[in-house]
Amino acid sequence: MKFYYNRFKNNFSDFFNQKSNELREFNLLSDRDNNYLPDVNFDEHLNEIKKILDLILEGKVTYRKYKEAKDSVKALFKDEFFDYWELSIGNDEIANMSPGKANLALLKLLIELSESNCPILIDQPEDNLDNRSIYTDLVQFIRKRKENRQIIIVTHNPNIVVGADSENVIIANQNGQDKNRENKSFRFEYVNGALENTYANKNENVESGVLFSMGIRENVTEILEGGREAFKKREEKYGF
Image (cartoon, rainbow, N blue to C red; front, side, top):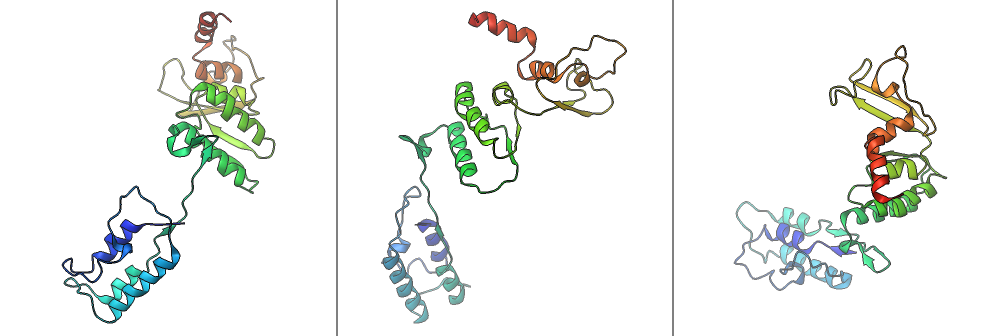
């Protein structure tokens, strides 16, 4: 348990004449580094609150113009306590983690501590994570947790869609973004299905619209992998 000393001091001290010496002796009102969060000694804290209240009630403090005692008492008792948590994985503390790794650590913590059975919605959990971490940490976590709860993810990363073995892939396309990816009827169109859904539309009589001209697997390859050519180029470069 911590206490916002600086916020308390700035709010409370604003009521009093700064030339007055009555309140300067109190530890609660001392100047502190904003990054310094000392543990609260509740006995000392309570004792100082009582002493400050006595000074106010006895009229021994000097107020600024238009400031009133009742408002200063409200400020004195304002709740500035907060729970302070420290999180570490192995020897790596969250304050020293990259933003992506810290987000992943918090995501795991929130889901593991939750007792809810409702679906989990996550928007681009791959942000600020390298692909190795995405596959070895994030994807494996998703595969484990989806056994108990439905997980719905917005992502642009193929490792999550393919590696986490998505049961249902929903693909969206906005008309006008790319002349090679035009919709059939509407500005926004969607198709969905499993990764096993695969075909390439070569029949001119079949309905138009880029999303409907190929299967889910082909759409995923096109959008997330950069297309078949890009996929094969990487395969060649890596020598797989």
